[in-house]
Image (cartoon, rainbow, N blue to C red; front, side, top):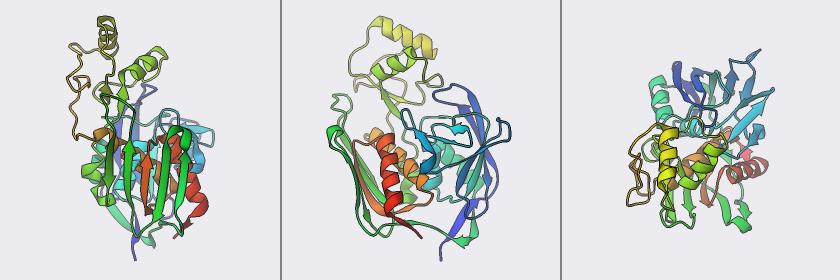
Amino acid sequence: MEKQTTIGKEVSVSGKGLHSGKFVTLTFKPAPEGTGVSFRRIDLPGAPVVKACVDNVFDTSRGTSLKENGAEVRTVEHLMAALSGMGIDNVLIDINAGETPILDGSAKLYVNALREAGRTEQNAEKKYIELSDTIRFTKPDNGIELMVEPAEKFSAHIEVDYNSQVLPAQQAEIGDISDFAEQIAPCRTFVFLHEIQFLIENNLVKGGDLDNAIVFVEQMPDAATIEKLSKFYNKTDIKVMENGVLNTLKLQFPNEPARHKLLDLIGDLYLLGAPVKGHVTAKKTGHFANVEFARLIAENAVSH
């Protein structure tokens, strides 16, 4: 019988929130069996707890965000993906702000922290989300398709297509969740330059940095735009490389963006409270579709 797990010891991670720009520290703590993943807002009166579950998702516009007991925790997907990838069932996360740190834009540093914390087997039997039938979520107007078929273990295949010259259609897959730490966790978030300009002008991504996002450039920026970016990010010598990416990061995999979308999907699905036994295929998905898909699974699956 496979057993539930928690972490072996407390471990902390610190950094800036992507959108708030606030410096935040979170501490992973061992938690009793059957309690799942919860955040505790230790900066708020009464230290309200926010359970990491799909029912508590209230915003998916710029990441997946949770709300419960009058408290919010924003941009949880990379952290949740790391917990899923490392097979941690139960953990309490003390956090002293309303958004998790973006770190390097991937799940790698969360994985490293969880490795440091170790994993402890508990007495209760591990739970899984099991399916009796195939479940589909589609939005034909957007080309969004998500499907999960019953299987003995979790696996996933994803396709992304932005109709872009600099970010061609690409695919990524994971055959076993044990491959997550090496193959998916290091893959960083990405953004198009025109999106960054919009976010800067609207006082968002205050914690954004050109070290934690791959920036694709579809239209060559003029000197004024480059100067504005240099000033905002406090970097000199920003330029566009031949592959249409800003020169601040080197791609770790040719399909790093697709792998990052897979990372996001894994994190969002872990809000079901247990790993899914199924093969997932996804096209053109994002946080909104991931969460709606997770809600469909919750309605139609059985937790064992």
